[in-house]
Image (cartoon, rainbow, N blue to C red; front, side, top):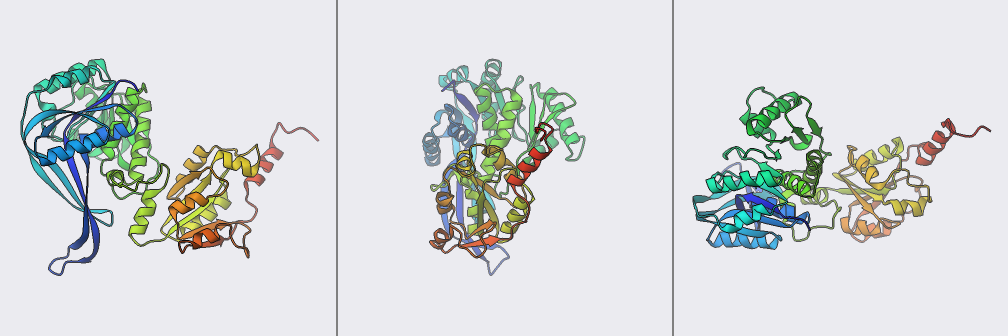
Length: 458
């Protein structure tokens, strides 16, 4: 493990009050949320630090901490996430962000906490910044990064190590020399009102202005589902698109993005590589349920499509799954996927790994590696999630997902699907879908070989 990622900023205590809303109040048209349970997690800069630690980095968090009961709970959560806390003393009360969620959907947010005077910086702050592999400033507008001694220490750090600054509308401008500043589109528009609009041209113009204004090496404007725009001040910025994600709760996506940028830079990536990695990380984070997904004690194994399945189940919907090799995706595949998705409220594709395909199809297959097959499938409109499995059959992944419907296309008509008995264990149903005749990967390969100019003459 290399030099640590040092996160400097405002740590919050986040509380999700999760319940069920099945009716409206008799005295007002508002939902009644009952069966409430409270889940605590680190928030603000503490969330960014926890996410960087989850990526495998050694992480130090420098934050103002109030010596009250909630401050101790926050410190315990930080320690539990594998982050070393360097506390800066502060008077007041710990900032708490409480969200009320019904069926996984945020209903209202309740903020509390007061910001009092920040005490003297301990010597550990300077030592941590001097040894940082990268620095992430996670500003939540509560005053820590405005303290002159903190700002001076960050200015020195920006000379020695890549510094990422995640700004806040109520906070100060970044220190000069930041490697990447990461405002979202709304923050950039508030800072640079002209030109107006949300077009890429308008975002690019704002980003170029901010690069010059902040004397930063680069500005990465996050664009939500559109990905991010990276500008180094020139007229042709880079746009990194985000993969399609179906999600209802993007809370913490900005922290995930900034933490991934800092972690990648600490590992030696160049700026464009770091932003590419951050877009992918933020998209995966949102797809997995966002900050609420992190707090689940029953988090699934990596790659398991928890969020679409959980969201649909919470709403009483139908989960559909299908599976196959999907090597050289063709019109027959698309027809099967469209038909399967029409049977429910989300579709999970169980995808054979490369080794699994070789065992089933022979040593010359697959033609397309699993990572690319999964990416193409995930971009198709009917598909909500893709899970790669290593076995010859998807039995184990089906046991984890427990779909309501297992759908297969092909020539199974009149015969029981091999997975039918498994589906009956939890009351699921296996079905056969019509197959689009004349479309197959084998046929495509044969046709390509017939037309190849390198094919030997008869």
